[in-house]
Image (cartoon, rainbow, N blue to C red; front, side):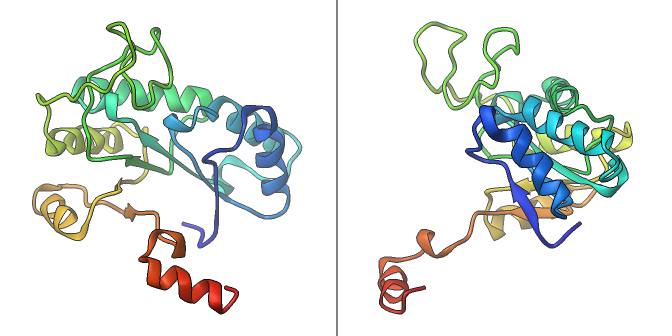
Length: 200
């Protein structure tokens, strides 16, 4: 996995393909996206353009995306993975992460995609937890994606150290990555004040 990657969160659809293409042209090889970002089709367009122009091959790239909360039930994990692969225009993922340890009620792709935090399949938008599925069931379905050859590596996102220790106890395919957001603006106000004082 490359040490530096391009995060695809909050990149608008109108500029995403060009940004991805130019990032690859300038040496980026890791692309970190997610179903929830709503721009996987455009990411795929940027990837295709770079490959078509001979800037890189598919094997040169390390493509990451994430399983959204409404697809946590084991029977929906492969569906979500294949949708992301289709949108990205690839036949395998280098890394697939469980985006959040929060299972929400399933939203069919045909209803709204990506479903984001709100379930709109039952009227007004609202968050509807799915209490009928546990994290270990979702993780087991992720492991099956590796066995099926759709995904090279799997992992977790937005969980703490105690949670990852639980995963390690039952995982037959260990998580390759635990991705968490970490930067000064997530830290305590004292650290923020210190950064401002030192012009960091």
